[in-house]
Image (cartoon, rainbow, N blue to C red; front, side, top):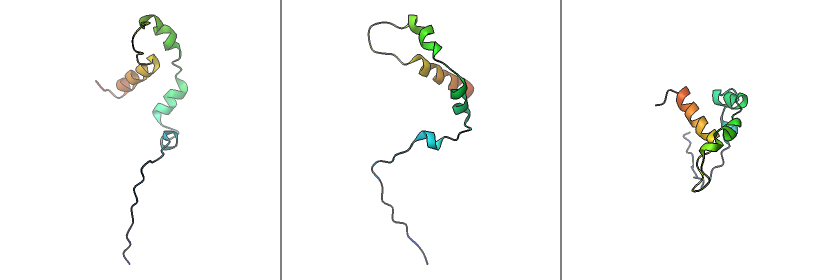
Length: 73
């Protein structure tokens, strides 16, 4: 007997990335081992006091690190 699936699209789908990314993922292991909190203090003198807030130095370093590790130019 041939079946038919009735698809009902959901407006919102809840996905938790912690559940989707495997525990042995390389970047998850890097995040657990690498403490980058020193970057805020080390780069504080390079940030201005006025204007819009810039990107967090930790986030910026992580972006550069992923680009380097994946040979993205």
